[in-house]
Amino acid sequence: MKESISKFKQFITENKFVLALLIFLLVALDIYVLTKISFIFDPIMVIIATIAAPIILAGIAYYLFNPLIDWLEGKGWKRGWSIALLYVIITGVIVLIFSFIVPAVKDQIVSLVKTFPSYWDKVVAKFNEFSESPLFDQVKDKVQGNLSEITKTISEKGGSVVSSAVDSIGNVVGTVTEVVLAIVTTPLVLFYLLKDGKKLPDYLLKIVASQLTRTHTPSITRI
Image (cartoon, rainbow, N blue to C red; front, side):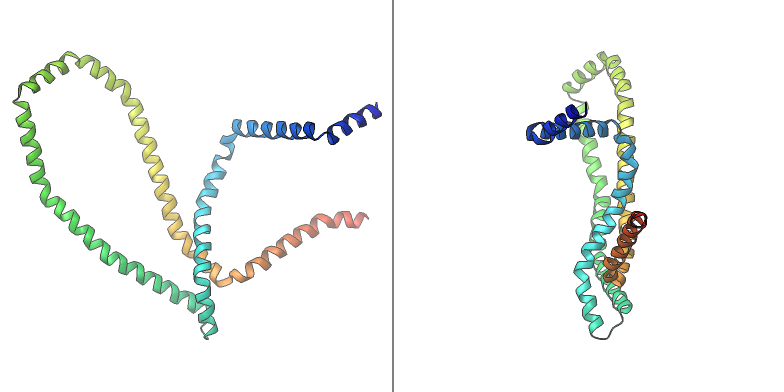
């Protein structure tokens, strides 16, 4: 019995085609199972998506601004004051940009509000002109003839439209929330990266080393 099992095991391990087929089947089975229980990972993916954006943005900003902070630190500035100066400069640039953008947008909105009545009058005039034409009477007769069908269609489609609208609003709210969280969180993450980012690799190595020590200590003790 043991000999037959060993031969079967040897056949699988030495036959590359069978081994590759077995690996493929296992991967396919894993993918199939994951597709059936994907809802379990939805909260995790939401958390990862929420955290990922600030970390990625802060990481990019760190590699952009860290040389400047190092240069200021080399000139005798304390690292904390250098970071504060950087934040003041960035805030000033943002305020300056908005000082140019906001008035332009405001002027466009005011212009639109002022010209809206004239546009509305033109629309009303065109509608009145259309309502006096024979074509309007034909359209009116067709609409009245199919009024019941139109009402039925609206009632049938109304639920799906409302559901789609609610889903769209939820998606917009979720996106806005993620953007706001990223805007609020990124400066905080960037501050700590600029302040103690150089210590992060050593800190992670210490954590990994301590975990490895805890894992292998019992086996070493047994030996």
